[in-house]
Image (cartoon, rainbow, N blue to C red; front, side):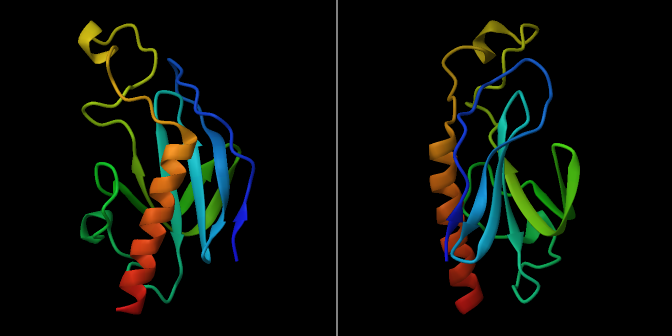
Length: 137
């Protein structure tokens, strides 16, 4: 069963923050898409019976933007901590737009990809499909 919260649009800022852009459950996997101010991130909660439960991010084989960069037994969002094993990735790689930071060289502030929440959600769904495939293998 899928449960999706209303989608908020990603707004790039010059300072760090934490705002939930979207959360819900897709095919049994809980997910979160966050705005960290300068860039968005995506996270998926891994069930205890999954191969990737308690695995470090470098040993998780998922085809996501920039590869997985997070795996911990908690996820901080806004004003609270969510327990569970969370894996995630970010959209702050070469070629990505990284906020309105004036001190960055000009070439790092123009012509970079500004990710939308809808685009990130599509990648979250693809990652969950990969997780299901690993689980069923």
